[in-house]
Amino acid sequence: MGILGTPLGWIMKWIYDFLFHFNIAGAYGWALVLFILLTKLLTYPLSVKQQKSTARMAAFQPKLKQLEKQYGKDKNRYQQEMMKLYEEEGINPMNGCLPMVVTFLLLFGIIDVIYNPLKHLLQVPADLIQEATQILGRATSTAQLEIISAIQNGSTAYDGLFDGSIMEQIQNFDMNFLGFNMGEIPNQVWGLLVIIPIVSFLTQIVSTLVSMKVQEKNGQKMQGGMKWFMLAMPLMSLWIAFTLPAGVGFYWIVSNLLMILQTLLLAKLYPPEKVAAMSSKSIEKTRAKMRKKREQMEIYQKRMEEKGMSPVKAAASAAQHMDRGNEHQKEKELAKSRLAEARRKMAEKYGDDYKED
Image (tube, rainbow, N blue to C red; front, top):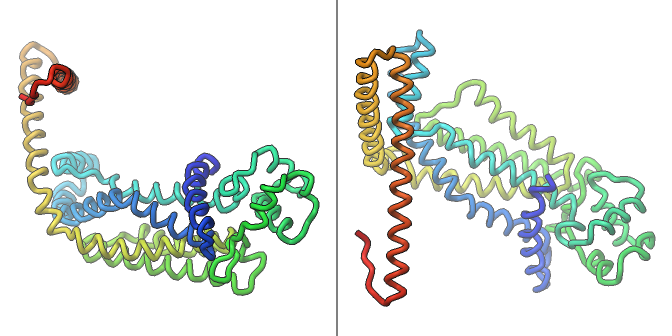
């Protein structure tokens, strides 16, 4: 998580320092909110791509059902025909996975940032953090949070280690927001802090149900196993939010609320009918390319068979021939691009006008 936490820590520190500079109350909590908003904006194009892919898959379902009806008993043939259909329609079933992967990576990174504020937000040198941990007497995941708490509660054990400026930063570092300490762990302190994991659980439930409802409306009803997995996720998040600092649960709450809004917005902006209309031209272009490629492969394969090559070897040779042709085309396009760039630079050098061919 340290690798992921470092770049996210820079972003969080920049936001936190900006808010702290202007004496914004609850700077740490607002920094988390702004961090989540920023990451949502940066990943929005991925979410749009996912929604378009989901909408296209919904419009694609009748063709898949027809294939299943036609080849359902022959699983291998069904898989082959399905992949061929995906390719012809220009659909990548894995497109919907990327936003989920990014979400998990961001979560792991922000957990590291929340657990290690001395490193990420206050940027205390690593050797001093190590010595402070030795003074604390335990190298646990909450060590940095415990060190900050000890100093703010009047401990003098670290006076000879940190200089005045670092001690001042630690004394002024405040993780409280809306009456909750984002550095405390709910199952260790209980009290009102349990509200954080409970609200996190409830918002996760709502987000999951909204997502499932939108998918069903688009004609993509979740199958049993996947449906139960999606419903089990909020329970997992409830347990995790109880055992990690409250800042993680708060991160989930804000993320879930934004996810609900984003899901409803994208479903309205990119319904299956609209996406199908938008992508019809590109689909037809993809189909034309695939038809041309298949025709060329069939012609080449027939020539190889006429020369005495077996059908299997002829098919493999045709595939290799097409791959070489694609590489040659890419090389031609690259050479053309370089030539155009060289002409443009020459025109600029001598003050001439340059027009692309």
